[in-house]
Image 1 (cartoon, helix red, strand yellow):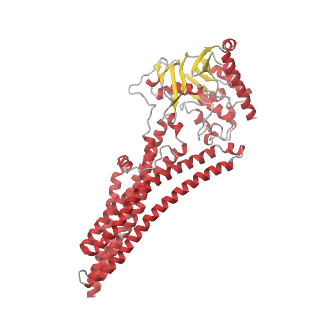
Image 2: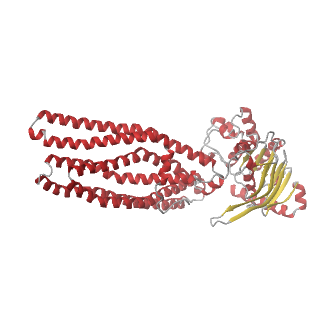
Image 3: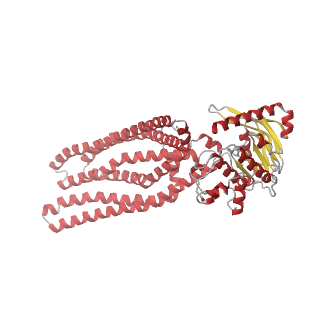
Length: 596
């Protein structure tokens, strides 16, 4: 379950934030409340007409007055229907715009939030907030807030009318309603907890489905579909149990909302007979009283549904603000610097970095990395698995900020640059190639949207990704979600083409050739040598062939760079380097056997 889930009531402050956010919809909501109040007033007038009809025309036998009374009731009913239509008309468009704006702002925050945030949050939790929670808030703005305000006012006005007509009967109705308000108050606190738990469980379930869909090949390859189904079933049953508790809680509220008014009607009928007999009220007045009380039944009974919708919207707002309130630790400086003529020199100066543990402690990975990559130079970064090589490349692209120390681009701390300027000068290709549901061309030119057909073709040729020309629609072929319709090697080549097409000053490659066969790897490396002549490159290397592309090699061990130099020199003089290289080679052989 989400780490932000709560088992305690959260109050209604989140809904106040929704009102602040929904300021453009305030006028439409106010109009919706107004027309609903008009509709409620019309509904309360109808019983008065009926009472006058019984005590007047029906007693005197004036047929014309009977027809007039019937016409008045018909007109009032039609006006009520028009008011209901106007309420939807006034509220629908503003509430839908609020939902769209919520989705836009939530997505904008998700893009801006640092990688450290996404490391901790399951994608299903984020998806459920972007889809389910924003829709819940829209429904509440369209129906919940309008009907809740209107019905509460209607109930108050209705009870005033009842007391004016007969304080005895009104008092009976009020006394019988007191247990109802008490139960409603208790309902709010209980339901809020279950609503939050349910929404978090839905997010966990969405994560489970997404992981299974993306990992379907692994599940099938190892025959673990049954285990995945058991895990899904367990979480689905947990959600079902919570939904049952929610339903029972709402059911009890509905029970009281229906039983209390019905019981009060029976008691009022007994008292009503006595009141009429003692001539404290006319027969028409008694009918008016009961008709008014009947008109109040829907507002009273709707309270249960409206309170549960309000609680759902409240927890939805809380869950959305869990994301939008998250600290944006990676942001542009207030007074950014610019590099007028970037050359592409990259330097790590006494860089320390560690990941926070759940108990608040820190596991330090980098313990003082010092490394200079000159403009136009290619440096291969070598280290055993888990030494922090990928983390070094992530710091270069400012996915994280170092705990201490500095990463510099052309002598400027990258924290003093805008992210746009930094990523204009630095492009990355990752070992795990991520592609988007877009055309081949859009994927490759993502970092250089203004690129020409020639730029596209050149990048594809360098990355040995010309296989795309044989796809059904060539470079216009839509790639499926995450590119899973392509092989691992094909995805890596397209990711490499994307980095090359960006035409950066600095190219950061995190073992982007690991899924290629030896022949294709050699072709890519030969083509890359031409590209790297005019580009600064930092390459995480796992193979001797990749190391040989570099001008220098940096050995990362124990959280520090312990040696730098040419591959041949380190191979001859550094025993630790030989050990690391042989370990990586053995690991690559194992992976190749597994892939075969």
